Image (cartoon, rainbow, N blue to C red; front, side, top):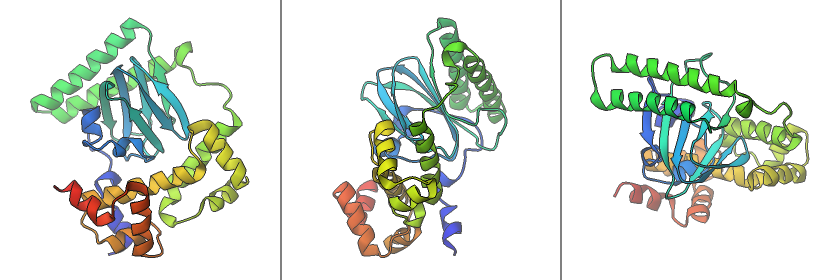
Length: 277
């Protein structure tokens, strides 16, 4: 079986068929690294914070999160979420195939208007009720509520307080382009210098922009994306370790094992076993 076909079997390679609502704990599947490491999701994601604080890094730009903050993150967007232990809220996975309904770019929404907060709460409550009761035509109802969520997002973006910035700093533009390349090529084993060359900048300039926008170096962004994929395949799939190494562009299983052990303190076999205990 070709590697591309194997990768397509991964649960994270397929978008949800219908909207799905979850708590933050359910979103991480009980493993914080699933949110905290740089990764991209196959479905669009809407996050609504109701209490507490956290941080989000989206396309390499780090920003703080607080109560009554919303995030809309399109499928395939490199991202990471660091949510504090006292941070609570709701996450909604939205099918990626429903193009044209939701924005094509990520947005961070700070909702101060109480009426807008209540409208969103009502939409999310209805989605949650449909999901938990398993009534007839539940998927159809979920899609209808997701449509209302889309309208709410677009209405909110039309307000001056949430309008996108007219000018994006050069460092942020470079970071967004870099993150798009990382998401496309992280399985290739390319070094950071190859990404810099593709972007027409020096490795030093790229790392400086990364550090300024995200607090991470360019190499760390690549490392986190590869590590996420490695852990996901090791913990959720039964692929041989040598095949996982090959799928992620490592020259040998031994090199892959050293990479995982340096990043996590555990061997690939130990990570796999611990996840299944």
